[in-house]
Length: 457
Image (cartoon, rainbow, N blue to C red; front, side):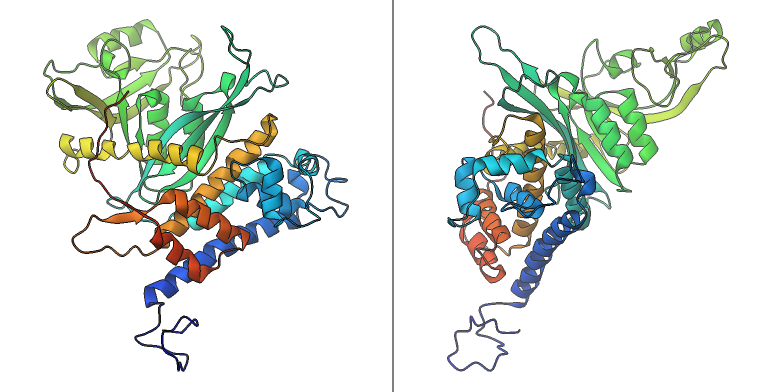
């Protein structure tokens, strides 16, 4: 193993077989750290070399030399935490007497479109994710949404709320995210203004533009839609979606057994036409379903005209599975996973893994700092959203490479993500060097307590 100067021997020839503090796995880890850092730096340099498409006025913006250039603005926002803008600037420039003011940063941010940070996030995610562990050959993905509350911006009516009953005005953006549950990184994200938010549309767009070939998507009841199922089926993905019980939702119109638990397979045909012939067929064949023009379905015409031929979307296949959670509660899911490989008990265990995206939102907001914004302008908030997503992935990828050595007879440990994020930020700033990153991450640990539960408030 090459010696990096951390050898315990007083006389070191440069190659140590026993006494060097860096093992082979440590050397590989350091290479991985450097690779992630260089990947992020190279992407920032590439965007800085040709920033025209990300500037509001390409002929004038960033043409003069300033204290804060284009690349500095990107790097600064990536490294930001929840402190004030002035304190963030002082930290980034290490309290130099030439530290720019908060006003100077705001003026530079005004010149950059949020697309620059979205492009950085998506390119970094595409380059550095996808090599993680798989589930039976599939990438295990979860989709969900979360509201982002920030200081009111009355100039943007689509995100602004005036407040009621003495409440102060506020603004909301809605984050739609696609999360890899095994690698623990965000694969894709779409941010919508709250009054225009549509989680179904966001999911379909993320699925259609994804380069992932094989995936299993886990989703909660918000994503119960024939259109969502069709997009996933056309993409070739598997899905496991929790649905509503009762008189509303997809399962309410299906012929299901009256038993408490069941596993039934269906193959539906969908149409918007309401001709007399089709109405008669629907009475005889329960697999033929009518889709109202008010319900989005991208694989059928938006309206059925009487003088046009009937269009039918065939072979939408899935299983409806209802399994017991407790003695008195049940859950119903839709899935196109093979019944011979995934029994109801296995589906129950698989769906429980969806909770990983909920805990990631908590870490993203309160550990990485997505709940703390440094502006009330919607475009500036969008910049910070994608900057935080990029830093979350950067921190998670590095933390996953750190070797955590367990102690026999004690609880298994994992890296303390709160401490790891701070260490990764300092590594990104160039304050902590690769040989020290793993040692620091491995020093601050938290015990792993599987199946730990708390009562929900």
